[in-house]
Image (cartoon, rainbow, N blue to C red; front, side):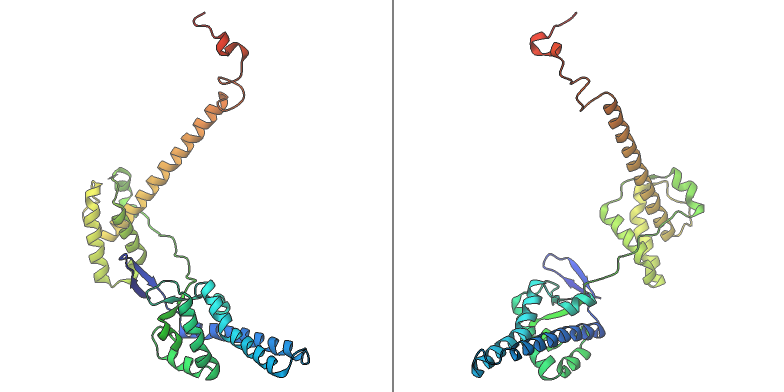
Length: 286
């Protein structure tokens, strides 16, 4: 995973494509290109006498350049870094700063791709990509681009719960509104804490628990591990929010049913068109 800091101070975490994935994607693109070239050759072979030989060679040369350079450049420009092979492998070409590529990036890659993929039978692209940490080929180095995994697995939902020993406390605890940034950092820690070393994990849990303590009264029993407290806090907060929203939805349904029973919004009831209730026939008292 590579971290990129944008101009807005936002950290982007992008996963560079592996050498094997890039190689397989490039092989698919080369196979498609070969099929297009064979189709062009077959098309010209069927009309040998319609134009003179010099014109046929010129047209075929332009068509060949269009297939080898024009088509890849146009496809990558319009799809913002994708091609048929990259789409099949879930890859995409991006700039070194994480942004989408433009025409000039695709053009540089396309022109150098003719040399390093077709003229050298892929040997230059193979050697350069093999010894590069982001599997860049020569065209990527000159254009300032690299391939990323654009198809990432969906993150698993956060699994938190209240341990049995803390259930009596959780039912009685007064949990205030946690700051959004704090709640987000606690959720990220509970999701990714298992990847940390034990010492760093405990220190981070203790720091987050100390930040969350002013928003909870009373605090859990003494000796409660910080991570267990955070898990119970997020779990109970989630359950209470779900119960509140569910009760609000039930109450809204009851109001709608009550209004419907009184004919509000229909063609009969308090707002029905009654001739005796027109302005001309309105009486006070009676």
